[in-house]
Length: 143
Image 1 (tube, one colour):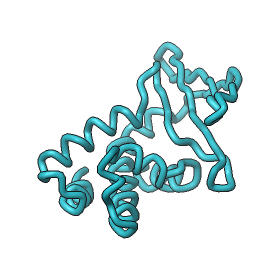
Image 2 (cartoon, helix red, strand yellow):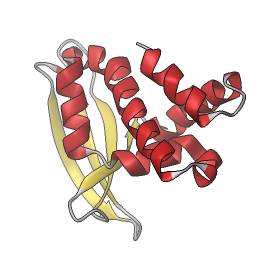
Image 3 (cartoon, one colour):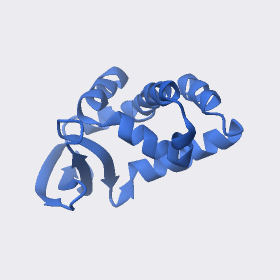
Image 4 (tube, one colour):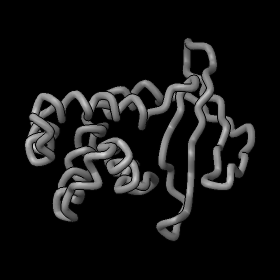
């Protein structure tokens, strides 16, 4: 499931944009090589963190309720229904700046994945004394 989730993210997510957003202001001082390595490490971290939960979605349904152009991105509104649970709202923020439509954030019941992970990555950066390279190594070892 972890591999499947990582492949899904590689295909449908704008991982460089998400990774830079999650890294926050530190991304501005990172080299191109560091950003690339961070993006790869972050993708693996996300796959390990969320991939295990991916199994819970088997048998569930996603119903798209509509989409709205915000001018910066398209927000796709949907409802997810899981077996034995009540429905919940999921919003996908999608853009096509890379030439294809990819998501740049997912909001589950109003909670942004990017903002949540920015907090997590910020804490990891702090524990590594602000070192991007140290944070990359930490992410590679997590999970």
